[in-house]
Length: 587
Image (cartoon, rainbow, N blue to C red; front, top):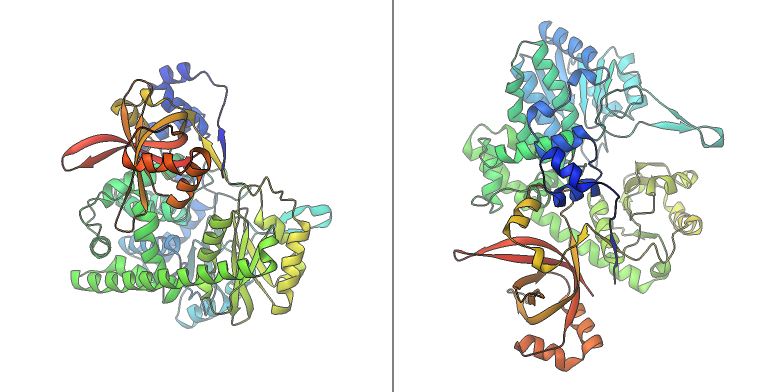
């Protein structure tokens, strides 16, 4: 059973509503999301291009543009070094296309997940030198590549880093952290302490876009010519799971509008291949359908195929690559499900189940899937989870965490057991020798301060909402907050003692529960629940008995009342429009 909380922040919502000409409900939803100053509120309500921050506020961006212009003028060879996830693929694509537009002599390289690992390395740098490359520009990586970049400088290469990841540090005595800067000629990353850029939560493609904005300005190209790139920046922003506020909201809102009318042959082919051709593309489609297909190439093959898809010049080539990426993603899904099942079996049959932090070793799992499997296990058990598997250099894996458990900081306490690690509070990657696996598990569990209370899943409601307050205008008001995602989650409302008139089980797999609900003023609403029907029936039987559950399914008079957490939406079916509550939880 989940624990329910209601956000309750003391703000004059009426005054805020009048100042920004929005409803009090929208005012409350914005405050609940930490959107509480004039710029954030205005850019959220009206996410247009002129609400973006000037790129010149980004540290080193002017120096980087000056260097790039010189290299273009001198016909020096530039190599972009990207990353193998969606953000890295998109960053590589938009930087490559933009430099070509500026007349650069440029190509790109993306590390192979299995052979190279994450980010730029000495082999890529050595090969670049062999290929006559003069300048390397990283995107979505490079901030931590201290030794490889030093090697590049020793070879006489110019290096420009564009990245958004946390700044590396060494821990000195008494836990004091000394942040490290590589020998790169320019480092563009808003998270640098000295960087005055006002928005720190850009993804890699967002950082690259700011570079392109300023490069175009400096080369006399109209800034508006960079705006079509937002279609791609929006994909990366959603898939990299950064907060959808400030500039990120502008990128996604504008990008979705463009993507729904995209002229990019690769994207059009992928949209068709995934069955989205007649649908309005949303953040859900980006995060769970389109993004994973682009990601699949970097997980099971080469991420270059993702870039090649977006660069496709013919419909035939685009269709071929889209089909290949779709099939790779289907294979990835099957492998993931198999990994999840094996992880569950290991938890249930061993002493791991008693742990507060799961460390699970799956020797045959494809190493690129460790993070996905860890995430699924974390969701099922609500326990911080690290999944490890065999790699060429010992054991390698990924972790996913829950609120209240800073995975990076906890791994930092175990650094003596690890060959390498990195990450942030909610996710981490690590490698270690096989003999350190069990000591890692024991140490993490010994040191953790997690309690049983922390392991109870929590749902935070935006406000209590009587059913009789819900109408089409209210729903339209709430929908102005779209697109939803990290930092701007779908609003959740709750109400107590809702009369349930009838229940029906729907769907080909009989896995959807539809409830007919009645308000105190005798209005009727449909509620849809996609969770465990078995759990629902168990709760009803325990409270009301089997006979009342049978009456519910028969549509007979019953005595069933439920507290519900829900999101109000619109259902359109066969030309009919009605209000529908998407039920998140019940009790």
